[in-house]
Amino acid sequence: MLISLALGTRPGGTIYRIFRLADLGQIEIIVAAESLLEFRTSIARKAGLRRRFPPVLIESFIAEVEAFAEVLVPLPAPAPPRCRDPRDDYLIEQALLHNADVIVTGDDDLLVLSEQFGAIPILSPRQFLDQLDREAAGSSPKG
Image 1 (tube, rainbow, N blue to C red):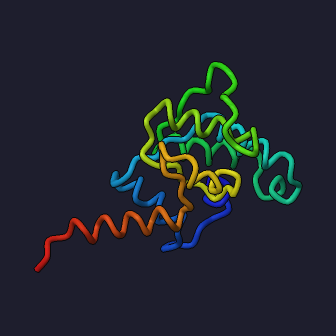
Image 2 (tube, rainbow, N blue to C red):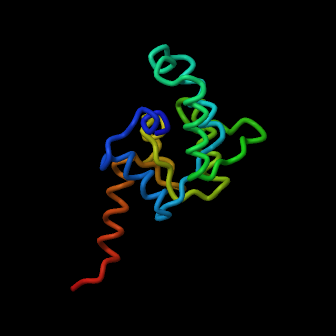
């Protein structure tokens, strides 16, 4: 989701709405330090992204993320294997260690775990917003 946010989301779009809810204090976002490193390396690996994001812009974006999200310290040891992409194992481990309510991701390697990993729901950004909308509708006073 970090790259989607950095690329610019349209106001009212799914990613925009999630980060807007965090900005308003309605939800809390936690970000693994490993995700910020992955963000940096993903941009460095892809020429198109490198052209769009000079280093100063990357650091400015990360500072903005750090301003509204809790950034978790890196895991002290490799995470146990849980995902078909071992590079995503840290996300599950961090979520478990910090008692996350939900993992929100667009990563198919994590989304396929949503059925078999029952401890913490793993939802796409759209599913997450839909869930929040259902919860808000259920808590509204009936008139």
